[in-house]
Amino acid sequence: MKYYHNPRCRKSREGLQYLEELNIRPTIIEYLKNPLNKEELKEILKQLKYTPIDLVRKNEVVYKTHMKNENLSDEDILKWLIDEPKLIERPILSTDKGAIIGRPKENFKEILP
Image (cartoon, rainbow, N blue to C red; front, side, top):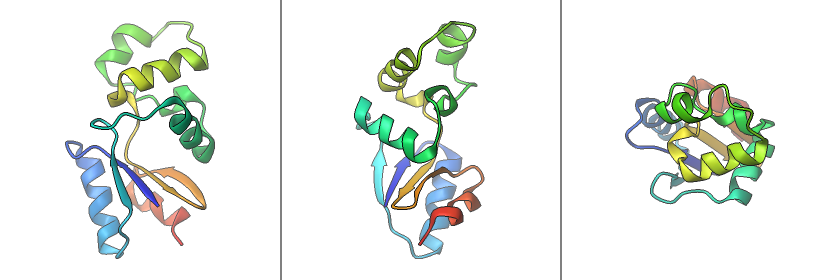
């Protein structure tokens, strides 16, 4: 079980605390310190059943200034997510049952063992 985490994000911290309250200790991946590669992102997208644009945080300045209203391919968006990992929606919990965004944190129950 993997938890894609940004410790500076309140929702990400709340999600991790929620899992700890359930006695669940996932492997924590701080994706801003250790950026994901293309294959890892594609696997997360597959588990989430998302397209690349579905994973983009639309309130980020990078999105608003460089991506919004552009005709970007999925490959273009993947490159942005790799180069600017703060664009990745969070937190993400990945299990054998799939992956889910923890907004709200109770979403995690859908894929917990």
